[in-house]
Image (tube, rainbow, N blue to C red; front, side, top):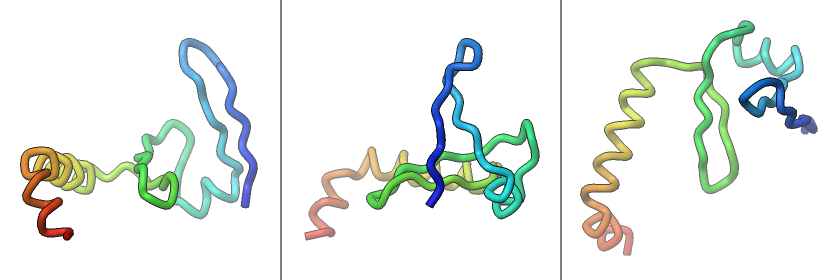
Length: 74
């Protein structure tokens, strides 16, 4: 577990990642990352245009078919 500090740098609030986390995720400075909210917390992933498109489509389907999905879930 790593404790991170939230800081206001300019017009944005930022969270710094330790070098070992950057290395484990295969990130380099200035690279975009995806922040995904899950039932278990937040997940950080390297930005992947294909994954971003898939997530946007899944979110759209979930919004459009919310009632059907609720019924299927029981």
